[in-house]
Image (cartoon, rainbow, N blue to C red):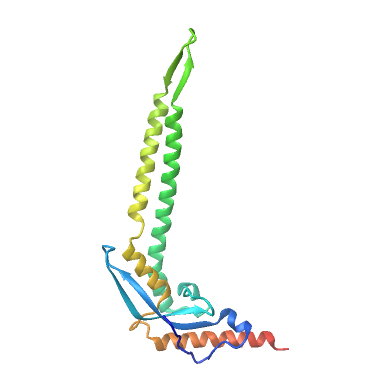
Amino acid sequence: MDGDFPTAAGVARTECEKQDWLVVSPTRAEFVDKHGVKSESRDDGVALYRIGETRPTSIPSLSDDMGGGPSFARHSEAVRSHDTKQVVAGGLGAAGAIAVAVGTILFVSAFSTQKTATGDQEQKISSGRAIGGGITVGLGFALGIGGISVNPGQAERSRAEASRFVYFPPEEPKADVLEMTGRYNQAVRDRCERRSAP
């Protein structure tokens, strides 16, 4: 969404300030329903952007720089569950793919051709390898299915992304976000002035 809201610190004046300065802008968030069919927009949120960037800055990543507090803890907690599920799902998917590959190699290697004393070729099957390969492939598919079931759905993903980037009233009024961001930007200005002082 276009436009931004001024903070008490005003606008960034120097190149030093522009590196860390934050701009408060209105931001739309899309929430997908639990069936992943319909979405609903909220236009009453605000997010923090670095100068020149079109993607908002992650709220949890700003916690240390902006003094932390309950608001940051709330956003971090809302995002943590989603991110943990994504990591677990990715790990299960990777383990499943490896297991399928190993099982396939085992299964294929169970079949070999040997020459008999008469010079004919005879098919030999290692039942242990064939069974081991089949079990490993089955385990790989089970891990893959587990990864799919753990992976967050669209509804959970949309809520986590909103929590990661957007402040919403009434829990976080725009005035409070502007005040907090103004203090942060003033600290950026003070730091830059100290650096440039002789």
